[in-house]
Image 1 (cartoon, helix red, strand yellow):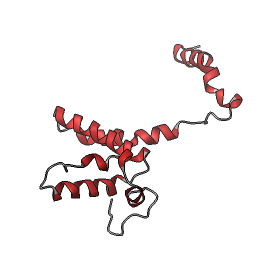
Image 2 (image 1 turned 135 degrees about the vertical axis):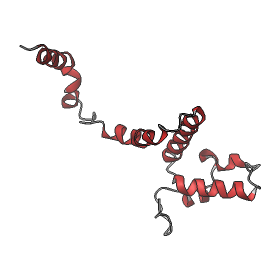
Image 3 (image 1 turned 30 degrees about the vertical axis):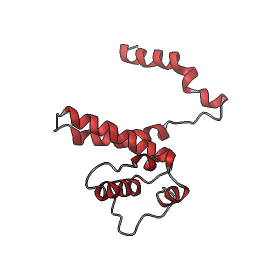
Image 4 (image 1 turned 180 degrees about the horizontal axis):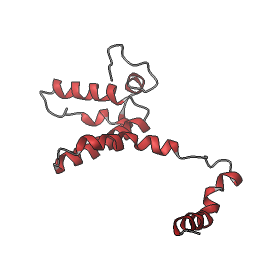
Length: 128
């Protein structure tokens, strides 16, 4: 048997229990598409960051990915939340608003949560 085929069959033998775990445990999904979809934005976006070569750009991207994931976990529409937050910054003369902590997902009022929810229909002029 050629070495490449032997390697594949050996790997299959070594990992068979993990590859078939969903047969005995129906709560284990057949695939990991949910996890892959969660990583799609950063993975696709990274091609856009190749040209910059700036360390600050990578740190900014990582911070924004964390922010967007936090908003998503709180069931908030990132576009709606960012629009509200950046509007507050503009109203504060281009500075962080003095009461910025009120806009953190865990400090939002029920009204804000409803207004910025992912479950709402997008604004008609939203082109994102």
